[in-house]
Amino acid sequence: MSSEMEKLLLEEEKNYQEVYKGSIVKGRVMIEKDDSFYIDLNYKTDGILPKDQVIDSESIKVGDEIEVQVVKIDKNTGDILLSKKRVDEFKVWDEVKVGDVLQVKAVEFNAKGLICVYKTALRGFMPLSHIELKFIGEDVLKSYLGKTFEVEIIDIDPKKRRLIFSRKNILLKQQEALKTEVVEKIKEGEVFEGIIKDIKDYGIFVDIGGFTGLVHISEISWDRSEKIKEQYKIGEKINVQVISFDQASERLSLSIKSLAGHPWDEFISNYKVGDIVTGEVKNIKEYGAFINLHPTVDGFVHISNLSSDFIKNPNEILKVGQKVEVKIISIEQENKKIELSLILEDKEVAEEETTEKE
Image (cartoon, rainbow, N blue to C red; front, side):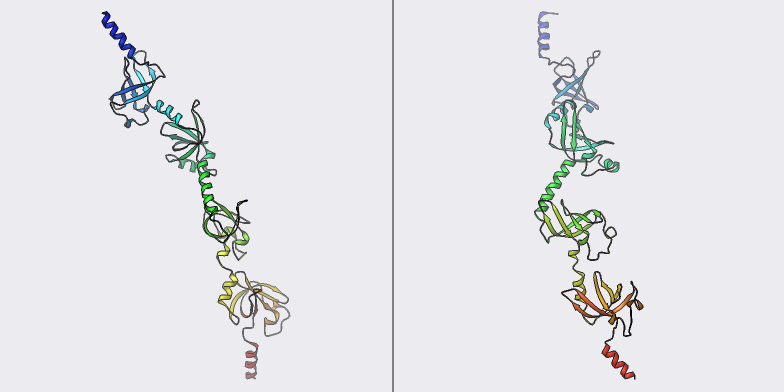
């Protein structure tokens, strides 16, 4: 070999970039095949870049200059196996930090949570306790597969390739934003449409849009005999009125019955003294009987108004639960009292009819 030829070869070797396993090098796409690209690395041998080592193979075209990592060099054939995916992953690791909000896709799940992918390059884990605001079962967990949603990075360690996500943190922030917005609107007397979140023996918890208040049992219905769990269901939409709100303690008291109007007002708007109405015997005393006329509206019949005939005890003619017709003989609006009579005809009229018969 002539000295000139040796000089040319040495000069050419000087221009070669350093290629070894693990190195990151630049190259130009020369050929595209069905399953790979051939990359000119400005080296003795071209590199082979399999398409499964590219995040988005459709974005690469012949003539593009790309950055790749050397995965393997075959000592026998000299083939150089490359990966663009690894380089892109390294770059993405540098882009993210704790507190960042990312758009990810759930690709796998296990008993402990979801495995999610960011930009199809980074795989992160979302613990079961960080998926929703409350505990979820396997059915709900499976439903996330294939879905895309926002998460917050709560832990990251590039060296250990550890990335932990939380969707719960996003939901908490959204809930807090809604809560702040609703708090500004909460005033005594305001009416909201809410959703029943929980039902207890002492009342109903209603979410009015990011803020939950209590409808105490005494504020559910004018009729205290109603059974809460039979009347209402969790998830049901319902209108409620604000009774009071302590912003410092975040204590919100609501009412359902205040929107229904008082049964007393409803009753006296439809009935007057002299009207005959149907009621049910609610309670019997020695001096008379209490008759239920309308939900929470009772009237009283004195023993002297139970019968035209003399009776010693109301139990002689009445039983609890018995349906009776009664006549309204007085209404005390201020004290909410109604006096009734089982004697439907006026005594004077009855006496005149008796005299005529004689």
